[in-house]
Image 1 (cartoon, helix red, strand yellow):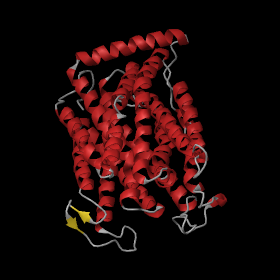
Image 2 (image 1 turned 60 degrees about the horizontal axis):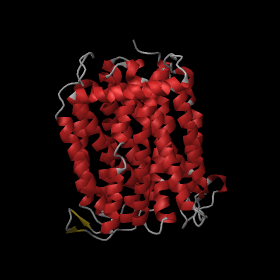
Image 3 (image 1 turned 180 degrees about the horizontal axis):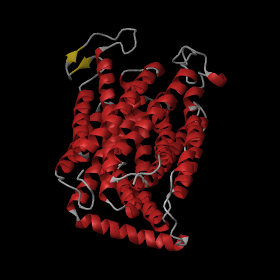
Image 4 (image 1 turned 45 degrees about the horizontal axis):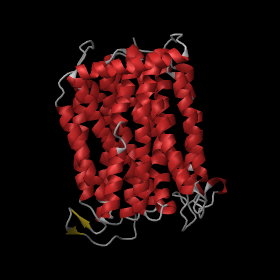
Length: 456
């Protein structure tokens, strides 16, 4: 039986509360600021950001499945979410101090970003594990898709706030809306860009509380902490053994590992790529981010409906096919050409004033439209497959499969960028990740457990 509406709203608001960290810090505001104002040059900035993303992925690969298994042993998810959110708040707020020319600004920015990424993803493991206790199998696709849509909407609102009222161009001193920045933020010191971190922290504090108040948690088992650690590690070993005994779930986790790795890198470098290759200003990056987030919101809602109608496998494969085409399209674009060799007219003074820029904008909209359904259907597939009482350890294993090599794609992009001396090396690497992931998911026919009401 489905939980009360207030419980579902509280659960979905977790995505709303956490998404500004990914929208503002990881992709559209702080990351381009880091590449353009803190790093020596955009290519070096992309490489350094990639190494920080890789470090966060390695930490997640080690921690998330173990913590998920321990949480299952204790029975409760909310204490773990609260602890991870506290770390995320502190990491996000500290980004304010990464000012241009400040002592150790670069290592501070990279460390705070990496720690915040780990905390946000760990909190998501436990939030995801609550899904199957809230709705039945037939509604999981829609619930998951709605969560992603709510998250994208939160990211959109926070992005409009930052770009419209806080982050001003150093050249004009005006924000995206042509206003002087709120709170007297200094454009020359890039205070509006740096404020994206504290805003993400405040946003999380303001909006995560309904999860703790209205969404029911599992009953505690009463197992002491030390025993829970031993029990959790034993559960993790048995979970891995079970997954290895069922080829279908093994292929799903391996495929998820590979395509999520590529998606992490794609989002980590999207804003940096636009700033570096096309020289986009904060205004153009802001419009790009807003439009991509809108397409992501619509895509997540539609993807959830398609998931319940056609199954998670079909949605995942369709999303991966689009991402492969998008990477090929991005690879074919340059500042003065399209389709690899076709020259284009010089850019005009208007926004997105060249054909390559307009095409890159369109490809970004496609990324937004399919990224939400890809991730939502991945967690819906697993939620339909595993018992609710073991969801924490399996979602920890899903996080492991999504993060165990999540350092690999950013590392490959960083290394290729550094070796080639061009940002165009990035999308070339990602085509391989999405292609292999799609091949593995295509081999799936039905869930490895047959206890659910329908096949994903």
